[in-house]
Image (cartoon, rainbow, N blue to C red):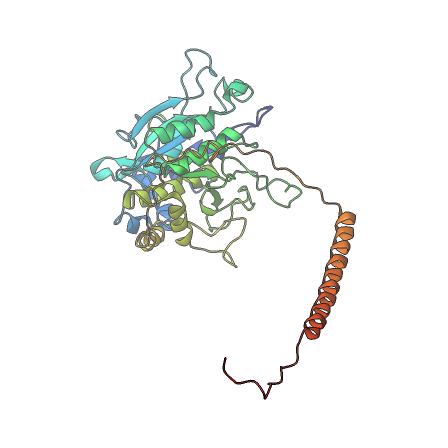
Length: 433
């Protein structure tokens, strides 16, 4: 699905390689490319069974369903009226405002799709129909930071400098509006200082960040032998997610590089679309949304757990670990919700929370620590002079030793010449006065 647009500072795009509307009855054949009527909701749930089993969600839901957690979806917007998301979506800020012509409504395709994988709750009796997300009791904060490729303002958005830091602003907005987890199924080629600063800010506030590793894995590798890094996934502190195929191997399109931390299913994943439709697609976007849902399950169960420990639990609980424990294709393995929750339970028993001297607010990591530091002064040393002065010092030391020795001999001789003989007693004198 993704089409590149020229941009001086790096194109921001979603991380889906293909998405089409589907009729569930023909899922076994190649994807339908023409518009199709909405599938029956019970078929939707049946089509999710393989993914639910891979993540071991039925067992995980006995422990946590994500209640009380807010997952910010930084994306193209979410259809809050979709029957599988009603009551779960909070409208955040639209940072793309002005890119589309006046009167053009957002399509909200990609964002709705991702939100349903994270927090879809289904519909009908007992919520048994439609899409069920990984954390069905979680809330979604929709923050619009990208446009769909098909929207008329797509080129303007990806070429105008005023939109360069929408992701950074979106992260800070999400943090300040109660997000516990931030899902970023988006990618771009270049990083910015503002994005790095916003990520540090989010982590300092206890927010877990999850992002797509990117879909350039099938292209020619760069000089390092790997697929290019994608941002924000490649920033330190962000969970970079790769996609696996139906055999739980790295999907051919999924980026392979050292930023990858974990993997999740990313091929033929079904989710919700605007207008009560259902869509199927592939990409690291879908895998990212699934991992964000697992993070939400952990945060719901252990709300005070720091981001680094949540990530540790996710990696510790991974299955299908590569030989040696890690590789650049699937990271530490395929995420498993039940095992991640079990790892979080073990970690939580040994967790202490440290509070800084400045109180709960702490220091804003986007600002430098301490006082302003002067530039480092470089001292150039003259090795010839050091050798010369060292020789002089050694000679002077030797001379001092010789002088002290001679002085000691002289003093000894002087003292010997001053020794007097014992007086001989006079026999004619009385021994008393």
